[in-house]
Image (tube, rainbow, N blue to C red; front, side, top):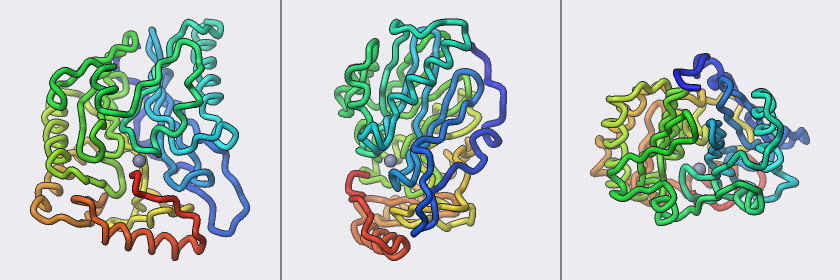
Length: 315
Ligand SMILES: [Zn+2]
C-alpha cells in the first residue's frame, strides 16, 4: 500500500455508469454497479431501477480494516443486497492477498452525511461480526472520529497503511464530512460537491466548508473530487429533473480538483441571493429553496409520467 494508485480517475471512474432505463421499459439493472480502482478501492453505485437517487458508495481497504462510506438509499436486502456485495468484495480482497475469509478483519461503516439516501442500508450491517456502524448525528461522528474542534479540526483516521484525513463539512447536512484518501488522491466530497444540485440549507456553513476544503487542498496532492450523485448531463447547465429514472448522457463522476475553487467562487457570488442558481457544471441551492424544489418536482413528475417520486425533503 502507499503511494498513488495506478490508473487515471477520469478513465476508470469517468466512463459512463449505468444510468437507469427508459421510462416504460421493463428492463431492470443489477442493483449495484461495482468498479475497482486499483487494488484497494471500490466505488459502487445503486441502480436507478431501485432508487432514483442512484447514490455512489465507497469501500476503502487498509491493512487493519476497511471503511465503507455510505450504505445508500435502499434498506431492503432483497432489493439491494449491499451487505452480501460488501462481504464478497472483502473476501475477494483478502483472497487476493492469500488470506482466508476472516471474521477478524474489521469493517467500519460511516457516512459522508446522515441523509436517508446515504444511511438506509445501515441495518444490514447491524449484526455483522467485527463491524462498527457509526451513527448519523453530529455527536456520533465527532465522538467516533475524535473531532474536538468541530468543524475546524482535520482528523486522521488510519485504516492501516492508509491514513485518511477527515474534514468536517457542515452546510448540506450538519454531520457531513469530506474524506481525503492519500492512496488514490481522492477527495470524497459527498453531497457537498458533485455534478448536480448542491443543496445548501445552511449557506454560511456551506461557504465556510468550501473555504476549509480549499485551504486543505493547497497542501495535499488531490487527483479528483468524487461526490455521491450525478444529476448533470454533459451539456453545460443541463441537469436531469429530480427523480429522473433514466440519465443517458451523464456528466462524469470524478471532477477536476479546480472544481473546488469554482464552487467556492460561485457560492460567494450568490451569497446575498437565496434561491436556486444554475452554473455550467452544477447548481447551487442557497437556503431552503421551496419554490425551486417544487418546480423541480413537477418537472420530474412530467418527465417520468408516473407518480414514482419519493419525498426529497430528506435530501
Ligand atoms: Zn444524497
